[in-house]
Length: 193
Image 1: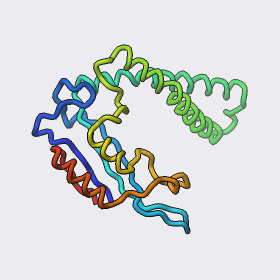
Image 2 (image 1 turned 60 degrees about the vertical axis):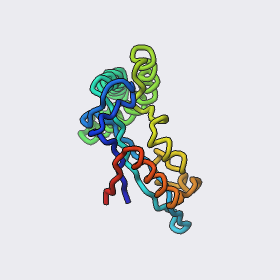
Image 3 (image 1 turned 60 degrees about the horizontal axis):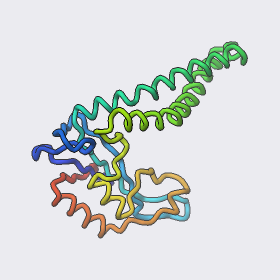
């Protein structure tokens, strides 16, 4: 079961990130939130509800968020080139075509990990220093809808795997109440079956 919550752009929504300018659906940011409704012991699995939340954003904040990702991309490229150079120069990875494909695959994974690990704090620092009038794109903790979802037990973590067995169950009655409150606050709630 999937639910989508979107702001009503007909009512001139303000941008969540700066709170000053009017938001546009074209630049909105989407997050998925998950709530576990049932747990099974054999086989170990869970049933869950996924709610897609659209967060209103203006063109100005969207361009700032795009610029802030440039260092992460640069770190990715640098890591990719350095690792490829080391493997080719010292590893003999160019003997067969399948070894080259494997090198590219492993190189991409390592570069993605390193760029996310190093690039994310750098992006947050850049946002804090140069774009203080605009929250970081992933900083949705104070958004009205996400606060309500978190309050009843939803999380951004996909509940696949063993760790989800430790999470609390969502009470469907509380979910219905929260969705009604969200609708009353001016948001559109729709099913995505």
